[in-house]
Length: 345
Image 1 (cartoon, rainbow, N blue to C red):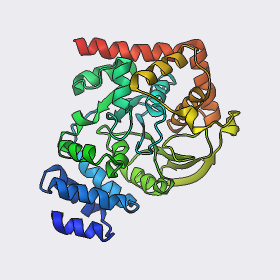
Image 2: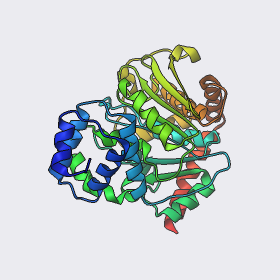
Image 3: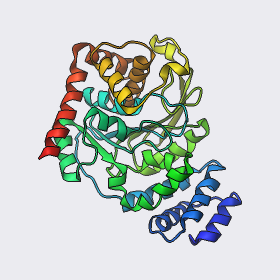
């Protein structure tokens, strides 16, 4: 099917599916501006009305990565990334970004891809910026930060300039769209270990299928009760784990590691600065409670997917030790200071 605006819009409005090649060509046309903003908005709404397929996600993903600004670093033990899709409307703390920083303290080499908040209050870029880390360093400078610290942040608008045509549309719509799903999948840097949180349980299978097609060595897609894109301290977390060609489904409960369940309100975040202040209190041993425990659960899951620890429980023990000794705080402070120093030239 040719990605002509009106015909493609009609096809999607009727519930039509896309092959991987169709999805690839459609995304190319969107990024090249050959489809009008109104038609793009209609397509995003049409795709929102049904479950997206893994093949479609893979096609969109491949087109976006091909157009992205390249970023390349090397780590013998592999590179990792974690990201929630956002769009769950729950306003929880910045668990994935804080988890990524803790994972670096645990020995994981992280190249995190992210953006400012679109439908929420605090995105990964907002959080890091208020922490003091320069989010928009040119690729050679960010590579230098990674070489010195094991952490890099790839600011989506910088690395996906072709997506500028879509940003005003997403902002005006103000709802989650297919791009919430694509954000975690289109890291310009080849990633070996990937953790993705999704806002609906029905998305577990298509997203793990897209991860499989992306070539990661190990991956996990998760959805937490009562509808959050992270490991839940409120209820069960449904997981899909990918290792090579093997896909396994499982359920994780907080009680398995000795944690009590909490209310969703206990996990609410605030402004980026409020979230940063809370994170620093956790690092300094001055904050206990549900957000600290949920953060450790999410960071432990990321460590485990990245090959650190034989289980989430073992990875949790590693993180507790890093917090108790102050090593986690030292690593985060070093990442921020290195970023500032490199940015100043």
